[in-house]
Image (cartoon, rainbow, N blue to C red; front, side, top):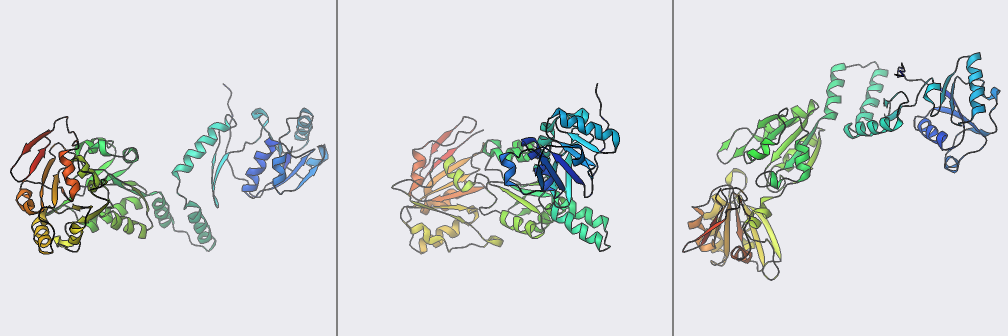
Length: 439
C-alpha cells in the first residue's frame, strides 16, 4: 500500500511562482489571494475567469531562468516540457514543487481551508482526494461559530501587548461553542413535534424540560444527553425562573448545546422571550424552534376552528392571569365583538372572575364557550356550554385547559374531534355537552 509521510505546517510570507493560466491555476490563485499570499504567474495565456482578478503576471512561455528567486513553485500546466524543466531545477537546488493533480511529484499539498481572520483551519488528505477534504471542511464550518475570528484577533492583540490569560481564553472560546435551543414541543407527544424540533433534540448535550413534556418525548432523548427537570406548575415550582436562566447560562458557557423544552409554543404566554433575552444579554447564541401552540391546536382537537367565514373573522389570544395569579379584566370587551373568537390560556382558575366581570359589562350570557382540558392527550376532555353556565361545568375540567369563546364553538358539534388512541366518545348533559377521549 502506497504511503505518504506528511506534516501540515504554516509558511510565513511565502513567495510563490505559479506556472499556468488555465482553470487549474485559477483554483490555486483564488486560495492564495484569499490568504493574501504573494505570488507571480507565468503563462502563455490566461483563461477568461482569471481576467477578472488582479495579480502580477507575465504572458510568455516558461523558461528555466523564470524560476530564479523562487523556492516554492506550482506547476498548473500539465505540460511535460515544463515538468521536465522543473525536475532539472530540483536536481540543482532546493525548491518545493507542487505538480497539480500528480501527488507523487508534489513536495506539498494545498489543504481545504477555513479562515476566521488570523485563525486558519486546514483539512488535507495528502493529495488522495480533494473532494473528501472539501466535504469535511464544509461540515466543520457548519459546526464552528462565526465569532471565532474576532476572538482570535482579540487574543492576538492581547499577546502583542503582553497579555496571556489561558483560563480566560479557554472560557471565552468555549462560550462561543455553547448554544441554547428554546424548543416548542407542541401540546402532547412526539406526533406534535416539528421535524426540526425532533432532529435538534437528538443532537443536544443537556436538556432542561418542563412538567408538561410527555414521556414519549423524553424517551426519544438519547441516553447520553443529561436531562434536568425544571417544571413549574400552579403551586409547585421545583426551581425558580432565575435558577433556570442561570442553569442554561452555566451549561452554554461550558460549550454545551442546551435544549430548553417547553410545552406548546414557548413564545405564546410562555417565558421563552424572557429566557432568550437573558441569554442574549450574556452573549450566548440562541436559536428559537417554534412549537404548535395550544392556543390553536387545542380548539382544533375539539373540532373548533379559531376562524370560520360567517362566524369569526378575527381571533385574540389572551392569558387568564398575570404574575401572581392576578386577574386581568382588560380583555373582556373582546367578548362583545361580533364574529370574533377569544382564546384564553391559563384561565381555568379565573373562570369565576371571567363570568362575573363579563356579565357586568354586558357580555351576552348565551355566548358559546368551551373548555378543552389535556388537549390531544389520552385524557382529553371537551366541555361545551355558554358563558352563563361556565362556572358550573368548569368544576369538571382539569388543568392544563384552554377556554374558547365565540360562535365557532358551535362547530364542535359538527367537525370531527382529534382521535386519541382511536377512541372517541360523547355524552350529553343538561346544560352542556361533554366529549371525552378515553385512553
